[in-house]
Structure formats: C-alpha cells, structure tokens
Length: 164
Image (cartoon, rainbow, N blue to C red):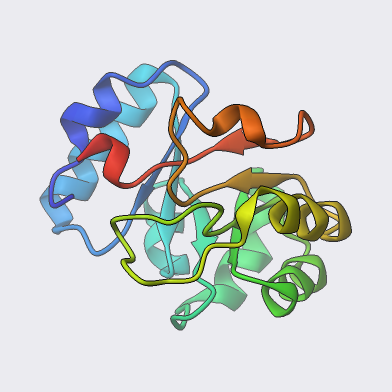
C-alpha cells in the first residue's frame, strides 16, 4: 500500500511492518509510528535506508538488495533484525548463509497479491520451514480460515492484501 501508516497504527506492539518503495516522508512517518507503537520496522531491499531509520532489513528473494555489506557490518552492533524472503530452497540457503534471524517463506496459499503464482501449500511449506534452519514466518493467502492449517512452530503470520 502506498501509505501503510494507518494500518501500522492498528498493529499490536511487537508486530512487524515492512516498508517497500515508500516516499521518504511516508517512510519517516512510518518509522515514527513504529517507534511509538513499539513495532519492528523492516525496510525491504535497501540496507543503508534501513540503517538511516534504525530499522531491520528484509532481503527480497527475487529483487536486488543495495547496501547489504553496510547493513551486515552494523547489524550486530545495533541489534538490527535481518529477515530474508524465500520462495524455496535457494532462498532458505541464502538466509542461512547470511545469518538471517528469520525467513519469510511464501506463498503458502494462493494469494490475490500474486495471482497465478503457485502456492506451496501447508504441507510443503511446513517441510521447507523445518529444513530452513531459521524461524519461518508464513506469507501468502494467510487468513483466519486457513492459518490453523500451519504447524504450531510457525514463527508468525504475514499479510499484504489483508491490510489493503
């Protein structure tokens, strides 16, 4: 969504919000909402921008990431979160190699935000998550009616369309 500040303001403390391709003023406002609400702010694909806002970094699986070496160098010193998106084994291997704190594994179910994309399904998702070596957050078509089909060890649930 072009301006996620209102949606972020409704999230409970401890939830995370991903900022991707936001206008600078919107990102600054979102960072303020995240601080005020005690949310984890993750910037997608831009390590230096994440550092500028004291945010974590989401490594997209199929898009390049800029400023990754700078982020990795500062990450431990500032206790910043590194989340890696993955759509299969290669993304999971990259998450392990870079020492990601968790992986955003998708799509679990068919999703309107990526029409036609093949879904992993809950069984394949669970098998990949178990082999990933990192806590796995489920993304893709997750809703109240199907979230219970995911394993209990699922580290979290994520949504795109659910907030639009």
